[in-house]
Image 1 (cartoon, rainbow, N blue to C red):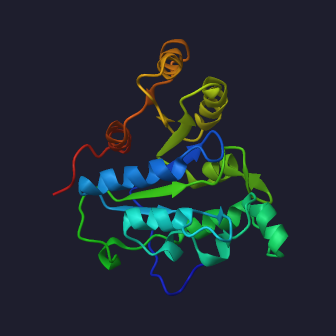
Image 2 (image 1 turned 135 degrees about the vertical axis):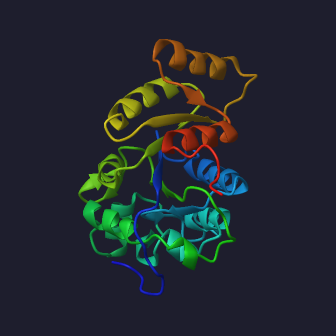
Image 3 (image 1 turned 60 degrees about the vertical axis):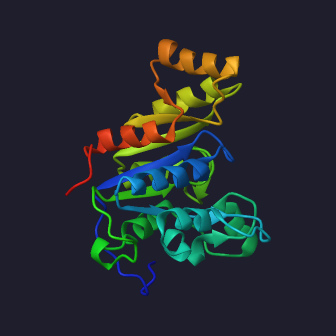
Length: 240
């Protein structure tokens, strides 16, 4: 299903997924700041949220925050029929509201037809490799449809990079290792340790353990994350 009020185009040059090891891990915080960083580098970015659920009295949703960062319409970021004002996983929220069942194939199809042609975009003129950023809902194995979870959707989207947002504190190694292993068959994975405190010994030791014992590099800087993204997608500098 698509909204005819928005023109659509083919897949962006690069697709980047923002996944998480858990709910409330900070995916939207990371996504909005990454988008802002890319746009300061004159990289054209569009962002999508396949489905979102939220408290009905929340003044802003994830789609609102993402839209503010990318300069798009929130309804373009997440279509209204995929917004569920109930604090449950999207398929559970849909059931609670008496809405239609959600399928992974539908979400993938809606995403593939949602991108706006650059020349029709209302965004300021930006050059560089167009990036499509997709923020998933909840953790990697959280249900996002009645027939699958975020990992199932990730496999259908064939992204160029997956950014895995994780906490920096206790238990994060246990959460990161299986997620990275599962995503390895989908795309290159870049781990971002959110809320990292360079003065906290546990945070520093977790990062060191990941890198030295697990051979998993972890980033803690949005600027460095943007550098990694552009290196992986093959765009180290804006086009001229």
